[in-house]
Picture (cartoon, rainbow, N blue to C red):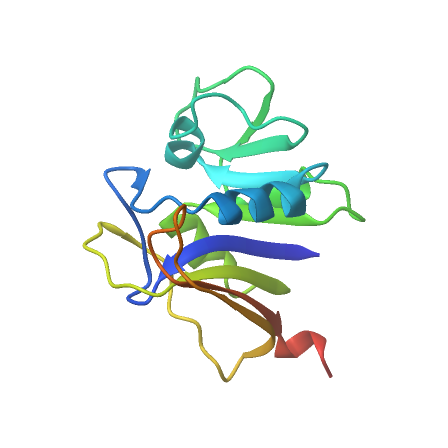
Length: 164
């Protein structure tokens, strides 16, 4: 199964200057619980935005740079190669960035979104979800609080091609 996982603003903003724009601790916990023990696929810039590789996950990094070889990662040149490098029975999480999301949205089976209920100035955006192709199967709202500056919702979409 190919699962896209992202935190996305109301205007589909993802980040600015290769950084997240908001800080939602509960979203980080959810991301960790969903992706731990799995293969995570990302672009080079997304990988480089982490202070260090994420523990207990297999990192598959897509890069056009010929000699790019970060320690402990599988490095490939395309999304197709990234998916082929993962075991067939494995849940694969696509974790960004914007260009990798655009390439993967047509082949994904599921989307796990944390919808941040705010509009942000950004330079990287998630592709708009074509609701003719996706069914919302789960939604859970969370109000802003002392540790979360914005209201947000967890949303799970399943590709309609998988529900026939």
